[in-house]
Amino acid sequence: MISESVISAAVRAQQSEDGKVGNCGRIWHVAFFFDGVGRNIDRDATDCRLSNIARLFRAYPDEQKNTGDTCNIINFISPEWALPTMTILSTIFTLLWILV
Image (cartoon, rainbow, N blue to C red; front, side, top):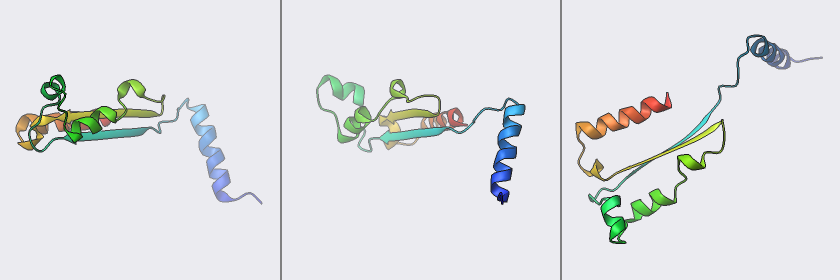
């Protein structure tokens, strides 16, 4: 006897094929790095004095290492997050809109 879940899965598969609907499942990996002591990764890199947060940011996979159509990687670092401002909040909302 065929279970109801098997029948409904088959119907969904047939409907998606008939309607030319693709798989919209995606995996998003988003990482926010902020240095609470006001360090700056660009300035500190020239002096070879990266903070631990900056080292973690550099070790995290970036957009160039995306693994295909179903997985996206976004990482973001901001030294200004130690002092929240409207610019930083705007940046956060912009990043969130990218995900939608």
